[in-house]
Length: 417
Length: 193
Image (cartoon, rainbow over all chains, first blue to last red; front, top):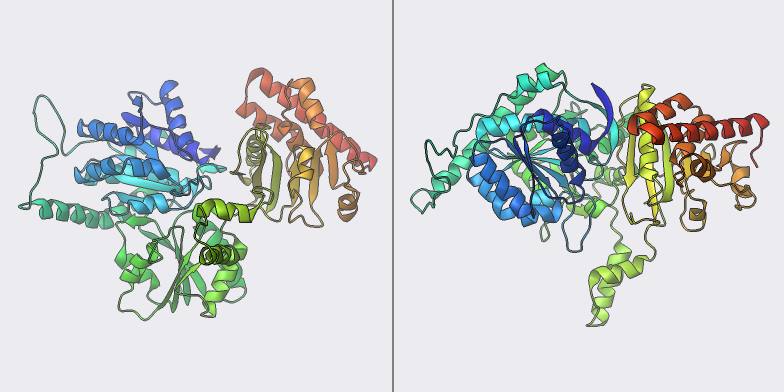
């Protein structure tokens, strides 16, 4: 049924349709509306047989989810930014133990400096944690991916992180097709755990493993993610059969058939990129888009297949690996190793800086003329950066950087962007 | 695609107004997107929200920099925020105020826009009379409906009835009716300054 809903509310409804048995909630922007939404559905009886637990921290949220999942319950939580960092130790434990928890990450920048706005730093900080990481392009995809995530997680016994852009998606109202309970029930069978804490058949979960088997346990975690490379497209195909629309999968191409230049990105910025690419196509530029939907496992073969005929790649990412540049771009380069394709990395939208069509046009025009550096920063105020570097050259006690730059900016909030 | 930017202050229901605008458009079979601009979202601080209406799926996720309509829920923002940033020469402007265009110092803007495209709506007055609270959202959205004819008054009222219930829904529906009537009357009189 079509409804005009906030992204967070739509995700809450999708999660409820998956009949989770334990939900651990700790508030942090921009994730809060999601757990509030599921909480309301538990309270008003829409979501039955579900324990909604207000925990005291994100570390507790993941720890309780681990306990619940180990006891055989379908468990869900959500977080963002510093919350994800605070739960990091438990995040690794959830995947290391092979517990199929589903977690929404409402993507937000990491501090310091503290910043509540959107970028992908939080999810990217956990890219090697062993969780499957799926990135939603739209709110429809976000809600659809949650339904797929429980299937995928439980089939593999691996936790799945559904990453959706904070504010841009979580706080956007749009028309969304909310599935029927019967459809979700047909698609997602009850959870049948591979391992369960059961007093009738006692086992321990979480043994210490020494050098004799640690490598093998870790290899199996990797092997499971490699299995996910086959399973993710299968589940997306089955999803399409039941729900009648395309959502998820490993990658999605847009106007790439004859494209000489392909823009690679993940998350909601793909929409603005597609609109920009349509305008460039009208001007005769052979350009297309590759959206990466599954970042972990990283679909090397699918990415290579989609990009192999291109002459030029522009990876636009909302994350920065300080000291090298791109994170997504590094993986894309791995997929293209041995190829002579020209590749550039564009760091964009950090800490909520708007990625506009105008900025994309400027950046892509520069890329077409081979005028982009290997790593560049979209809409970076180089004047502001240079002023501060000059201050640092001139005197020793320059004080905190963030405060100095805010003084340079002056009044905040007086302009639209 | 039609793009609307709503300016107001934290606590005035700016985000709700954008949501109601999108819900009204949805109820008339359109694709609509509403989203807030997060910044200093303290009570009383300047806040913004955006809405897009189109006949097809909306993929664009940038803030609205060249609005087709600007709604200002608090006239004191005119002194503080560049609310008309990116405003085109065919755009619509609605300001919550019981002053005149001249009193607000907007003669120049009125002259630049087509006749009737700038309208002042005493939205707070309507809201205080019906709701007893200074929440101008319903009035501004209904005024938008009257001015642009992109959505109907009935759709605005049904959006408020879907989101709210009982007395609040009915009071907002009445606020909407009054504001719609106000703008329609002004347009019929050909009054715009």
